[in-house]
Image (tube, rainbow, N blue to C red; front, top):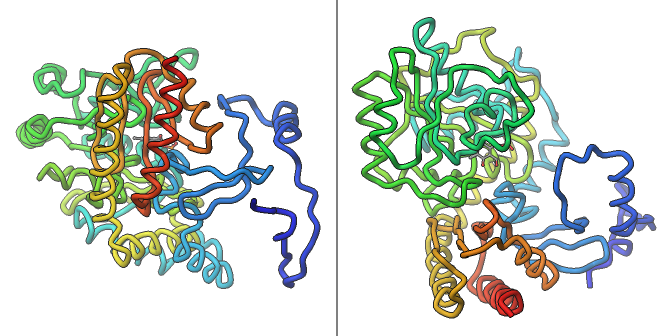
Length: 414
Ligand code: PLP
């Protein structure tokens, strides 16, 4: 069992005894001092390594939903922690009115790996999408400012990203929200065509809706969107906050479709665990936002850029994209076996290591049953179990997770 106390070592290398609180004590502190904005499970984590995490009492868990896709390489990947440690010794933050070599380097890597244009850095997915909205409005200014987004989409919690999100439950109670957004059904090209007005500036889509229940966009639909945007001179924006950085077996999900967007937003696993967001715009439009039009104090600091550069390097050197493809196929195959065993499973959806198991009835209690047995997964839209293990996942990890899920489904059904 992992012993937190025994391994607490201070900067001089001296072992120190630290009084670590128990889970109930931490929950008590939260109840008194942290705003209750999250629905939380009674789990208090203190350590992570690879695909495993440990709670404060020393119990080990297999993490098949690491940080809601933030820890895409697993927890504390050695290349990431090494680069962070090295950068910490030099400089942590450089304001954006000066030049920062790490930001320039990361922008080059990101541009060359995707749209070949330029990058704006921020700190989260919502911020990246806010930047995309401002970009589209600046591009269309003054005539075009409306954005078409999809029903069941999720783009973040800031006011405009929230308005763009196609799930009204998140918007309730926060009006009036910014104007200029229309939602249309997912995978329905005719609906997009119908929603276009002379004021439309762009269309945004997640190629696989994550929070929406792992809904995968059809190839013909995405090609149709590209043609439509070309014809009507609209910006096509892909929100790859959840699907990006190898999650689906390609570095970016759009690479499965043979279609490039004009703009792509990224966050989550881009930083290997540290907060970073990015807006990438293709050549030809990338200079739309001029000095003073948009900014972020923390955006693209040397610390997060060093971490992100390590993520790119690890994906390449450890061949994690092919691992994601192989392990994704294996996980899908094992889930198919469960599907033939349990009639309660309605459908399996997803690509690479972004998989959803839709059940025929509400299934959130399965998540706690798995957790009690040492497996962390998620449930979205009440009925869709979400499995998104890190890109480093092995066959043995998949087998262990499937065994636990099998037991949980068996108990739940009875
Ligand atoms: N876009 C997508 C597709 C997401 O899944 C999320 C978060 O889950 C966001 C945007 C918002 O990201 P953040 O929570 O970093 O603001």
